[in-house]
Image (cartoon, rainbow, N blue to C red; front, side, top):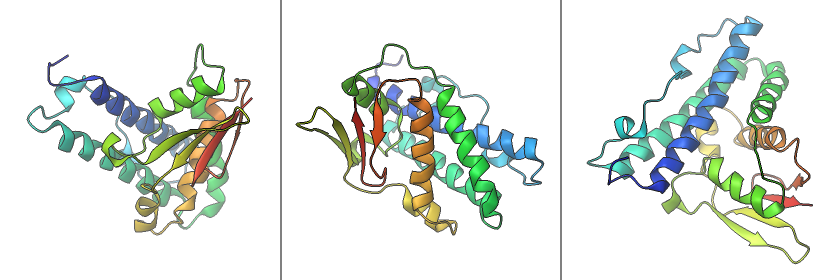
Length: 196
């Protein structure tokens, strides 16, 4: 890895790739269902190594552009498929949950480990945005608090309810943790609570 690229840059790149895997799964669903929507513009099948993907002369702006692009592709594909066909949302939610289930998490069982893992994979803007913070509650639960909403505006810009993003986020996290001995609650707009 380049001397200019650190662990946080790789973490951000991996978060973008995970979001793209969800987008790709939605595109596959669209084709399988024969929904007659051209989703090719939203699909990225292969990501080059980070050293080739990031502009080393302006790493922060380059990563920000990739985060923004992933958020736009996600909102755009959901809009293209469901804007005039809300009955498709149930199948979209199911495939998002299934995509989460397909991502095996080894050695993550306690609320602390789950919280740490979620912070590693969920795309909540750039680290400098400080969009989330973690609260350790006296009852042993851990809460990921959202300090700002970086997602709704992407959905609203394409004519969707911003809360739809959080419905799909909840489906993804529920799938991701379906084999874990933890409980997930919260509204996902303001917080995610992880407990035993």
